[in-house]
Image 1 (cartoon, rainbow, N blue to C red):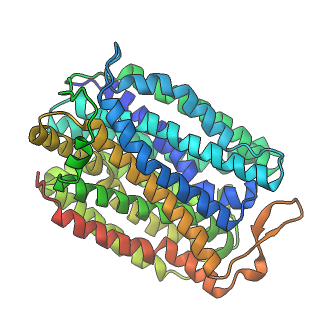
Image 2: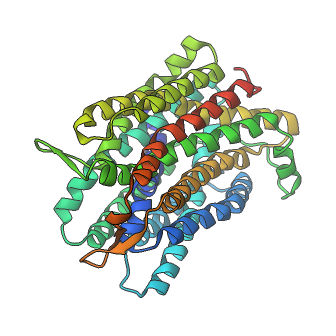
Length: 447
């Protein structure tokens, strides 16, 4: 029986990767790369797309490598322990804007974004795989998954709600603010990742296939549960990716910028933070909800339907800052669905890993969990790339402001651009959630 200390330790891993680094990369990077760093929409879109194509190869290789690791710290934990420092340093360097010309800045952005994706893979694939070797009890797996999501969403809430106030505290230019906060959050991510590696235990020893073979990659594509779950994972990250990546543009252009209500500053990070705390609460309720429904599969379907209904509802809210609290209410309701399905996804990956071990006679836990990390990054980056692309297609163009920052030319913000932004936060995610529900209905593992 795992202790509460170990479950909190496991939660710290996703608090670092999901609640800090990935949250900032998902919600801030499209706006950061265009409006602060100075890339064009086309460059920002290409950067995030190339990085995800890179991940298609690195994530499965990392999973296979992690499965064969043998050390005094176990199979997966050493990657967290020794990967924690480069994880934080590279994240900090990615949020630094060097005083280079356009060509060198483009090279800098590409190099450090690809490095960040590589080190994220190095840490996060083994982190997810830990779930498969910490316990063989299905209920305890659900509890670990629930703690993981609570950690991610609680830290995500803290990150998003504090970001504008920390920017104001740091002062100076936008580039200076991001550089300082990158160093601060990078250090925090390092400490949390290291703590996760030190506080968790590997109780189960994987049945190893000691020699590398491409057969295990072929086995994945003969694993029907894995195929369905990978498609579901990609869809969940498309759903979140569109919403988080477009939130900054929505607040800036559809609602006229930051909204001040008393002492509360509602910018795009605070706006989404309301959803984070809801996800944290419902992530904790997910095991009880699943037990009530009777299966992970049906619980996932019901949660997806909540996301569909609320996303469609958001589209019909008037595009006016005076409706901000109604928008927040709908975001909170949407996040209830996200909170319910998020822990289920990782628990279902553990089920697929068990299924693969039973079918093939050797463990491929790391390889299977790597597909979860790959789908996370693929969905997040492609959605970010598509947003930059869609805004350009809708007519948005870039210009320089008085401080030399790249911003959207106000003259190019037409009704079609605003409608595109609004749809990217509502109708398009709703369509993706419908696909999620259909795939979950076809998912063959019924427990």
